[in-house]
Length: 358
Ligand SMILES: [Zn+2]
Image 1 (cartoon, rainbow, N blue to C red):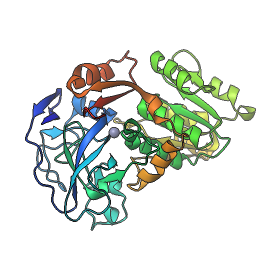
Image 2 (cartoon, helix red, strand yellow; image 1 turned 30 degrees about the vertical axis):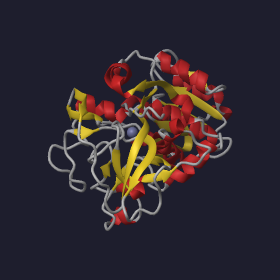
Image 3 (cartoon, rainbow, N blue to C red; image 1 turned 180 degrees about the vertical axis):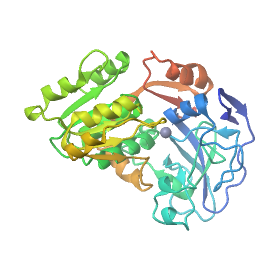
Image 4 (tube, rainbow, N blue to C red; image 1 turned 45 degrees about the vertical axis):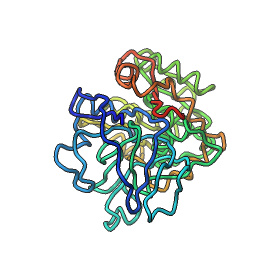
């Protein structure tokens, strides 16, 4: 079968690999429909291996070459004898994280916090960018009729956004700054709107992405901080010029975090979602005098799927609108990775069409 595999930095290709054999115990065999290319995948391509390991993974035992794809929907093709939550033929969306179920965070379903977390498509034997994938029973969630196969492939990044909005505590009528308008920024903006944010400001330096923000979020204030003073804009659109209630930082660059702490009102909340891969110089005096909360936000609790799918199915969270291209698996590099890595490119979210059924 076809599988997009990470071999090493700058070395990802489609390989012909043996399909999975019998599914045992609590395992589920899935035929992926759509699979997203994530910023994490791009990061692995440029700087990896980070999540995939050369030695067997501490929990799953998987190692390079790693089949990619942790954001996917599909159909159940077979189930192990102990599986009870899904059946052959079910449409499913995959929650890709796993952790030792008998350890502190695993027992609580907080796989994302486990030091031994494994992820389908990053540190597990199988991934969504392949004709078939094996996952654990608890990784597969049945998709309601109100959610399409394409939307179901977006539940994973959408869950990241919903968790960030939870961490920001966004309430009806709030003003919110979204910093960085890649796929996670775009989904955070949609999730903030679904949570009731009435004033949304988007800060993004890529003009194509900023134009996309304007189209995606009618009524939002789009700012290119290279051309306009973000602080002035924030003042001009918030009550008495005091700043936004909350800021969600998705760009992952130091100046963006500082722009967020400057933009929130006193006792405001800043949530850091983007991965700041270098230390950031901050002004703690500002944080203290403004009495603000600055929080990290990583992934999502593993029980997010039904809630996020309900939100999508209700029409309040139109996640499909962040998709800028759907490309065949065969073109994963030329139409996927290469276009997403173009610094002046207009792509935001690229989905791979893996199965002909999709
Ligand atoms: Zn991802």
